[in-house]
Length: 212
Ligand code: SF4
Image: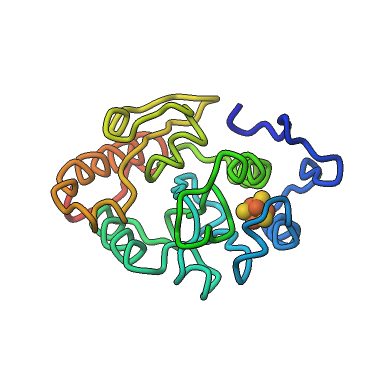
């Protein structure tokens, strides 16, 4: 369930269902200690962008730069993401909202464990319930596996739309993967061209992009 907030890990002390705006949700999530990641990071990185945006991008988790600044996607991968968004005619505080599967930095930038993803799932679900995206872009395997398919493979599933609970969801590579392997950039750009086309179809027919 994309926006469901019940799970095996449902916690009676962590009921977010009565929170209906991002500001109050952020205050609550900043107090979260539902997994061990919180003890090893500076703070919760909740997300940022335009709360009214109907295009949401979901990554894996904060890295060192994000943990330091308390903002998502501000390191090298984030700078690349901003360039991709710019090429699409998107600006991070105007057209999109950016968040992560887990809100606290995994040590050494390791992939979050299943338990950590499950612990943070109510926070992600509450964000998505409030944001009500029309388009959700999943950046990388962790987001694909957390939101769509625990056995998902980004190399196989990228670029293929899935419609779930009325939301058009597109997995694609995480920008960090593009930094490690620049040959993936061409496929990534094909995916983002699809996002622009879907954005024009569902959100703004007049959306301008110089490149696509
Ligand atoms: S990663 Fe998520 S569940 Fe774990 S402490 Fe941080 S906000 Fe809470």
